[in-house]
Image (cartoon, one colour):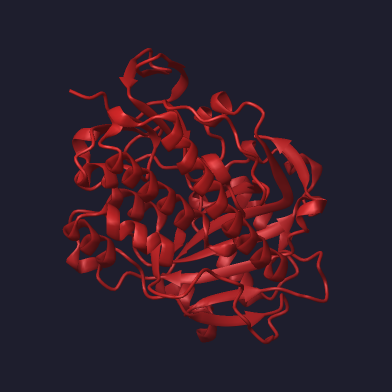
Length: 394
């Protein structure tokens, strides 16, 4: 029997399962212990095409039923509450588009993979042999596979070992994610025009002000779904601010608790219109988090390919979330890698040439996605040009 594909992270399992490729998927978090890291994702053309290829018809139908209402424009206002003309930030290509909750989407993609998924598995290192790769976990266990795929995000442990000199960019922007339940009490205090669609709070006359995006997330088919937990309706919000506007005591973002992140959002918007501030004041403090907006450069240097180790998604090409392209690009990577494994006759036939071709196409596609994300960030969220961002080791 062939050794399996070992996946550190998520996103590839369904495509392999559908094509009868053996695999084991390792999640660092517990099954119900996903840290707060943003809630709404937009799945557009390249992501939908990848899901069509990766999911069985039954799981794709489940995916559609777990989606939130279709995306649409809301309002654009200034921090004082006055209205402003609204032009949507640049987005991905047209075609079918879906709005998903990150945790719901994760659970949906894991549907049918129960025997292949292992939780609380923190990969510490891997060892490449001539005929296999061995991964070692912090719990003392090891696993052998034919190919290791690092799908483990921005701080990828696989990438750190595979490409130790990988350099990215710190955009200088920080992003606070939050979630406000759509309770009757909250809606009673919220202007009606704020309740529907994706809205933006920004002041182009004062670039020192944070930028807020918010959108109500509701699930029209929730009562039809029993196998995936659908949350109660909520308002998803993100507050984007330059690090120079955050006090020095709050600079070490990785150590801010949920309540500290919520307090920071409140402080940064203390002079704003009370109706807008209701979004922060009635938010679920435990569901608030803060992150740095990091990115690979549009021109990602090629690395030496390996027949035993590769990457996908943010592990290979993290990008700003301002173009709604990150999840779609990761899904595209996963579908492409799965198709290539099938095309060569299975994971036992994967060689360096195949991985080299896959990674070259990955970088080429990511270049366009990163550029699109940057244009969205420049236009609506105050991102600096690439040339002004700080190179960092990732």
